[in-house]
Length: 435
Ligand code: SR1
Ligand code: MG
Image 1 (cartoon, rainbow, N blue to C red):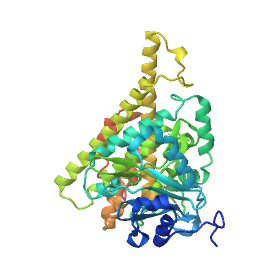
Image 2: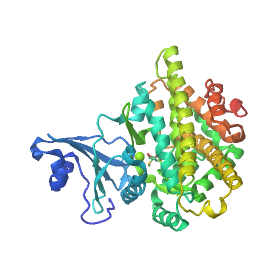
Image 3: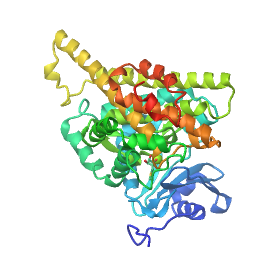
């Protein structure tokens, strides 16, 4: 039996979504005409929610509803629909800082857990673009800008701790989705769990090798604790290439339902992880060797750009910030020497975020191959043996990075390591452990 949060809650279908808009005159006015003139499409693509696009003679809208279960699994996996409230709270909290890097929200319904937002057109999901071999070079820069702004402005570097703790209080209520992350990202891939979907039998040895890797599990424990305890800034919490819609010259970040106050590197690391996955999957997606090499070079460039823009913009925003905060009180930094010391601290702070970024990237890659939530990047490869080889390369890279974090204080070292793991073999997980 389906547990719903209130008696009025109704799950929408495409017709219901159009009817919902028709019942709200301000929203219906966006579409123009009458409901008979409208077309409605179910475009749900993610794991959790319903999403509909409704077009009318004058415009379109996107209607998103939180379902009380995991959409791609069914009613057997209930899921708290209050996530929609946290997604809305997140969008509202970051809106003053991100401008048009997020879609415009027109309406939020606390009873039906429905968000009505701007229909993004002709934007496409960044992952779909990358899968089609299409480069959207602005995306990496824009997402870096988005993370730099949200991370800085929601941190103790920008605001009094009272404001920061208020955010922490609000988003610490997003318990159900933090539980998903703790389980699916940090825990399940290193145990036997029926939810795991490692490609069998090809990756059985890899899955066993991860379960038996004590050093790796201790490292992952450190990063899991960091996710739970390191309250640096408000995070998107699920910032992968499916959470970005873009054109050649416009980028929007969507889907902040996993929001929490946590380590900034979780957002940057998750985003980079999905470029790395695209890099490893590329060789098995059927292009010519030249196409593969040039697309991979572009992906590596995007990773470099993403990190460099994030680091530069984060420091610049911080340098320009002339408002009292509790992280770096102005009374401590008055002389030239003080200011030089502060600049050195800024650089070391961003260096620390890079260490976290690389670690969370590694954890995210592993869970996307061994765990429940898999990726089209690999699943579009129909030959399972070929798919397994591409996955083994990514696993080898991710594990090596996690075991040797000290080698990756520079983003270029990370990019250089990609090719070292490209030929990793699915049957031989141990050989690549020390690379
Ligand atoms: C049960 S939800 C699985 C995954 O989908 C979301 O996009 C998050 O990445 C989550 O881990
Ligand atoms: Mg999502």
